[in-house]
Image: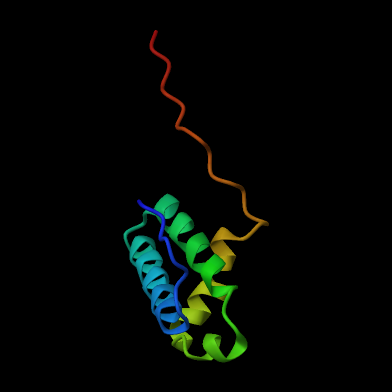
Length: 91
């Protein structure tokens, strides 16, 4: 994916945060935890750049999922994902 050249404006930034949270939730619903984790991290990084007033413009359902519910499953206290699956030994 190509990097954006110009930083997002405040309205575009809010819209992008909402979009990324929704994408992460769709990955979550599809049980695709690795993709969900990556998208959630990107959404959280953008969310942390918002001001308090801008954060209030994000729908509450999305904010709750991003900050609380997903933290339960993807927080620092959880075991990190493995890098690759171990293949079964062939005799």
